[in-house]
Image (cartoon, rainbow, N blue to C red):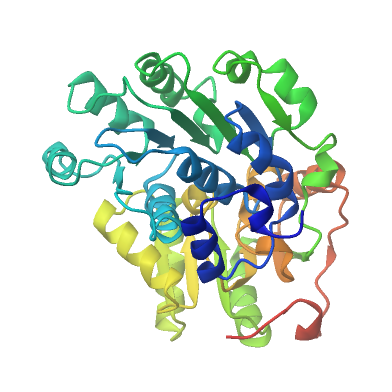
Length: 389
């Protein structure tokens, strides 16, 4: 298949796809859309930034009847991803009549959600599991006619140690038995999926769209380097030097703690860099406002915790810096996946200070088949920039 018209999509969706600027389906869309559109349960895995979100959005919009009740439920791990997913639904569903989408998540008074339900009567709900469970439990919404149930970032949602897993089971128990279940992830491989009964027991005879080897998950379009430093106190100076000499459109700087996120963002602002922070201790309103400023290019630099490492899509991010090396190789993959979207070229640099940092970066190299060499002093932007803002 070489165009979206090959899938038999509604004319309104074809028009929206063209309006969105999608020229042809990505490889994962070619593989997954036929089964998703046919109503099969699906466990879909592909590297981050490959177009998985459009698979469940287009397939649900193509099958829905747009009644005055909830037909589609999408569960996501963070409020930022909920807001982004609703925006994508609205863009791809803008030519469809009676397509109404709402986002529900914690941090807002429950009354705000209740007012939204009563005023807009959504037929598509995107929510975090905890808030969704409350709305179902208190009978503010009914799921008895849900036809499509989506778990985005399912490996995080169904983590055994997380309360979200219990919430999802509760929510799913209130949906009809014959609903379609689609799960999406960037980090589950075939052997892992076959071992993980927590995925399989939620679906009926699922189709698998998975890579066979973990090394196939890495982003080949992202140039990945390490920058070895003598100690922690050298990091900030090294960061400022990088921001001064590396050409980029937007950059995401990842740290491991909220305190460091606040301090580092403050330092960058004092140095007159256009920086903004996103972390879990911010109010919901401030987090969403800051994320919107970055996404809309009103800020070129975001300093963030791993809260922003899952599923968030910002078009002009061409540079990711791991100021702190992440806790493991999967977190590394999600972080650098904030750039290199849809195989665009980009750059990622990880600061390496401790033995622990070296160990994690060694795990990254072994898991994904990449070699993290030292960042060269002079790097030609032509090798990592596809376009400039």
